[in-house]
Length: 539
Image (cartoon, rainbow, N blue to C red):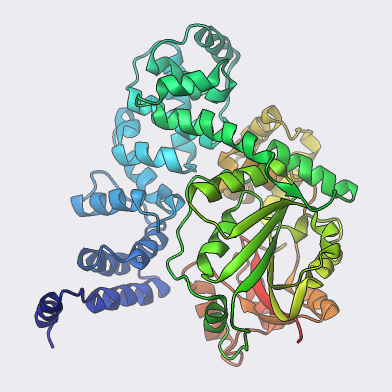
């Protein structure tokens, strides 16, 4: 049956026929795996024209478009796709930073911060671009000096500065001018300009200010900068503790994240492939036996809640206990969870080193991004492994020493300069890294998203406790814990897995860590984020 007949048949029955769109999306995926990104985007654009209702296609669009540098003027078709993607819950707005920022920066300099797509993006993402950061800094300074800046631009700048926790440099003259402004706030533009330098909740009588701004174009600023922080303060008192922190390192890590909860996210990609726990594990690792029925999950080191929420959305039959040392991070996580209407997560304050006394056992224990911040990672991993029921699973995330070599280089560069892990120290460290000339590893650090926010930069360059691992070390720890390695889980386009299969066809299940070690030696950025993998406990 031809495509026209297929559409007609679907229309006659009142049902959509999504097969042509899904076929185009599959072709786009295959083209992208082979590096043919332009043709892949063309195919995916056609798929979205046929089936704009499919969340999976929008998620795929976000994953693909993040590689593109676009130029002004944008084709109307691309502008429409980006506009729709900016509002779509299946798209991570961080994936739109490069295409939208590059398009805006190709406009005449005076109109860069007048690009509507960019102004919308500034509200929901951290825009990691040095040139744009400089333009934002200049624009807010000019506004403080009395220049006329459109209100919608000031609001977008204020959102961005709040998202980055005011990581921009600020002169003494700006500080003095801001003090004068704070004593004479009257117009909406005054409040927007103040919010570009300080959060609105730092003002006296902030709640009444939120009420006053609720009916203005600054309502979104009032919500994020006043009402949300107040809600987090209230939620702190609703989070129970599972014991006290043990050890000096745990206390130091807790204090860091109390001062700088990380990451301070606004939107995340909504899972569109939700299914029961057993079904998803069998999809990831065919042939694995998984107990059916509701899954109890423990998430150790949940931070500000992104992993906990993603897990609660991913597994349709799960209940999650999410624990963290930092009450500030937990309050942020709980606020976002309530905001999204998610009901199957319980948050608790706890040190994972004190979790050994828990009487409950779990089908899945996740520790992603936490073990490498312990004084003794293996000891912490052993405690968590003891909480897994026989035959249950762990999902682990560990920093790769090789994949994060540029961050280690940056720390060695900064150490003798004596910068403190304060707002002023972090700003000075950023300036030193940018002034380092043609150091390629430092230049790579300066392109990382975390470089563009205060909490991100502290986590990346000033963490009180961090170490990286190699895959042989991971293999040794797995042997020590008697855990079976099941495989890596990649959240990108799958390029690493495809390349690995081509090089090591004798390992079809991709579970040989020695081979993966050789692969990483030749492809050192394969695990630049971290090793993320599943293991199983004997049972």
